[in-house]
Length: 113
Image (cartoon, rainbow, N blue to C red):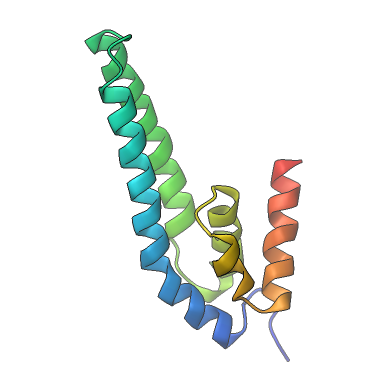
């Protein structure tokens, strides 16, 4: 019998394959945010520094929540967090099995209210 806390093997393999791609995507997005803040001449250097400091703290927490604890029992939760943060694309989501997709979408719907 399938343990409801763990995703099926094909979905687990897909998640492990997509994990480094999504991590790179997340980091690319954050670096874009850093560039925008760092180059915002409407803000003082101090304001930019504070904004960058806040951004890095927030994104570090998001990164930990999305990418740490890589285990089968946490996979659906991590995938839902990645989807919530727009790191897991529609095309990537569509590659997962129906049960996993439904679980991801349910969690994201609850979090978005």
